[in-house]
Image 1: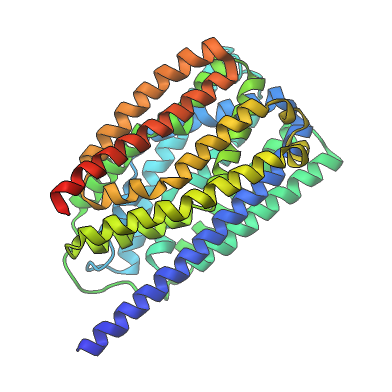
Image 2 (image 1 turned 90 degrees about the vertical axis):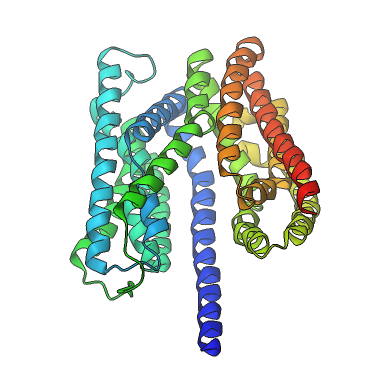
Length: 427
């Protein structure tokens, strides 16, 4: 019996490692291809149209988040180890998809109404372009299909299909650049691969007989808990809107489409710089939880200190290299970016600080501070929006980026303060 448990534990560990590798490779490929897609997009659309494109994406994402129940998050929490079957899982995935369809329809309706009212940056696009922008923005965020493949341990399928989608987008953009360099062609280049990806995953889910193992026994599945987990996930997503999307709307309204275009490029660079530390964050969550659950809180604090000491020089080195070589790579992404050295420095500094202390968030969550985390998120994001409006109005683009820097630093300081305060109670 003991040996069976050991074998099961080893299989779980190997599966976690394998799935983490697949997820990491997909994220790296998506980020890398996105980095190469931006220059082509800018050459065809121009900075002003690109800024309007980003504005519509942000507006659609906000409406979608506000009108969609993240039922699929509940599936990820409740299905593992419960009495279920492949057919039952498909039924719940279909229910989850219905919530997401409502969100997509709502997003298109709101954007279309704003377009008919000649709302600035939205009215510059035709309704067909708006529909395709919404499709290309929201299809990648649909968690229902992804949840099915994760729960049936088919991460490799997600990686292969996702990688093919990203490559196809780059191919379509190159074709558009050389054959038909128009705004509509760019939008179609973003939408078509996502339609094909979602179509393949959907068809494979509903028309291919599943041979993946799904638990037939175990505790009874409780639908109420699925809804509850989905509601909490939705609440968290809504709380994160200011940093994820609302800031783009405010920058676009307060400044200009061109400024929003540069702002979006710089935030993408922020994500690229943090790509090196993100896997450490994801892998540290179960490690912190394991130590806390075994009452080894002192060991968890030691691990937290070690990760900071490890990530700080790595993040700093990446930041220094990025800034020192800016004359080389900024010309590739966007030639005008070389004129934004101060803004780039603020973004890189923000990324270095965030990357150095990224495991603080994982550790705080592992200590069971979920309610406190939500309070910190909501409070800090409200303050962030206020600072964003104030500083962008006074200092333009660099003011918006300084607001983001203050937000990141403030959240880190609060989490570190409370972690050190908690240390006295545990250690």
